[in-house]
Length: 325
Picture 1 (cartoon, rainbow, N blue to C red):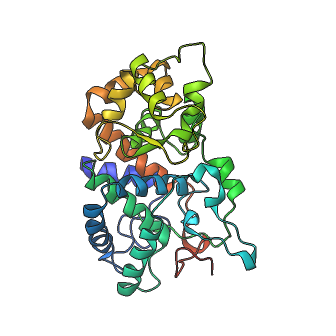
Picture 2: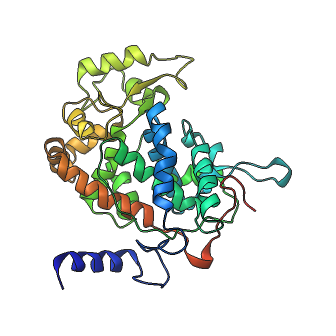
């Protein structure tokens, strides 16, 4: 068996991916039922990427928040229905700032026109996030498909319990991601998704001001002053005010790690990972070796997108992504 085939077999074993025809996720899942799927998703997103360069960050965060709650099942896309007493995961404050959910519904319409009742919203969402990484300059990630959509009304209480807070530390982060099969290196790599987008002031006010009288460990003083200028204490606009995650906020690169090593990380965990004995050397490696970060991020992305997903008769293929039939 040649090395490439051996790697593929190992991946199939780890992720429960069938080779032909069987259950579970497969890299060729839509080979017969919707062979043009990935091209449709890419073609639908490209013109929007060109007009809205912030979209990749939005799609990546949308996928992360969906997958964090009982696996990637497109539950975050479901809208509330008052007369049926159905709530939405969007009701939790931890989904504050989630945007552009309608993009997945638009892609679903395009896919349905070519392949009716074949492709789940969950697979479309993960493919959109994969394209977001690639179009921003990140790695080209090959992902297995075959996820099904949830048929159970989403719970904002469950989302609130499972989505980590902005104040999460290293131990909490490692627990979350290693429980999804990630190594420590992959857990640190998945945090690199913060290289895209912005952080709302609401999520860093506690770090900036709750330690008054003491220097926040790990934050460079001039950077702290800059953040306080942009996110003043007691501001009525902290929900809408934000700061860029890093100077190259539209480019998927290793700048997140470079910033953290210089004491310019925004969140508590950014500083903690630099000082924690489990993660410090990995942070340093990723800050100096972007290819190493890309490799680890790619495998972490696959593990996140395949952990705890619904397959076969465990779920459904929704006709509309925002509605539980």
